[in-house]
Image (tube, rainbow, N blue to C red; front, top):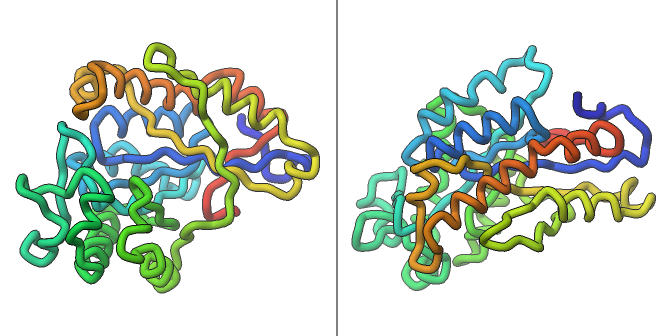
Length: 269
């Protein structure tokens, strides 16, 4: 059992977040496992993803009020599609968000490409369509964040802050990110640097800071092995995201959270 919010005052508080729910069947199942068996307490949902409905079917029971391990869901604002495969595009009608669409009918691959021609009003229209789609399928979002840090494009972040205020969503709280470095293509170990960083926190930092740990859980399967870009060697994405799943599940991580830390939701900050 994960440590209680009422433990000693110097208990580390960590917002644990899993991104890209809805992007793949593999991600949806890995996120479910990390919530059910690990320390994952926040799930960012990608509404334009091809498996949004499956994400709801996999994760809907975490909304139940009597579930002992509750999860907060958020809109993962997505206006780019970075992979060669798979690709995705807007939720809103393409004719209304033409500046967000490239030749194949999908989003641009990078924020820099998006910046070249995007219209702010169309960005906002798409974000609102994504929020509506998430809610229509059943999710009750409590926060909002950005896929690939898209908020810097065209001043979008300021408008997202206004939208979040209107919709009563948590957006960009003051959190200290946990650096998760030291990985290689052959060995994507995120759990070890995660624990090293948290164990090194001083008593003052433990009392004053709330930390943010973000991962993209998935399984090593055919679907993940097929995900690729021009720069990613075969199997790299799969290995990397398996490591990010293990981050939330490894026994020594869970033991640490039982004794010295608590995984919190955005609505508990």
